[in-house]
Image 1 (cartoon, one colour):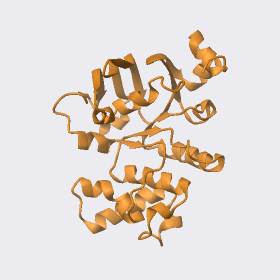
Image 2: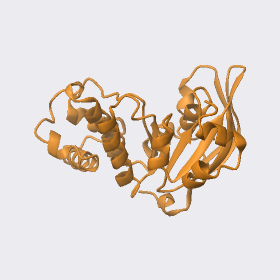
Image 3: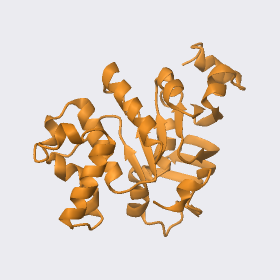
Length: 257
């Protein structure tokens, strides 16, 4: 893992704006994301928090008409520089989506999929990464005798853990999570939240959530987005108990959103 994980701030966002055609989805966002912390992004639907999350590994590049201004500095480099290797960027800053999205392949092939994309064909190495990744998401004991089974036969929670393992297998430093528990029941959600606590010992996690209770439970820092603006960002306890902006307080207390 690169030395950047030892720094206090792993990502610095500078004057970041995003446009979809003529519509401005993000308005000059500035913040610093701390290494090996969980940062939650909250706000009403359509406020820009998922758009912001996707800027951090340039997933918005895949959306027709999307345009980004400003900088996202990671490992001392602006990821929006033209020479950025997007495949390598998305290895180092991986993403877990709202709904589990395992491929229609075996459990083994799902976990090692990214390794193969990056040109890895050594079976022994892939087996070692598979073991470590499934162990990290607490799936090894459940699945070690079923590695050739279809991943689509797993439960929703197992599928989401498998997708996290697929990200971990390629050795990321940052994990982006876009409402990873929205399709799960409360028991499965609690297990995924416990997993986040374990993972932050080694990884930086940034999570978008509509569930303010979840943000309060799992995150170290929280950012509140409204109409494309980052209204407030700070330690989670401060955001939820003594927000500095009245708009944040209105949202936290349920008067808005």
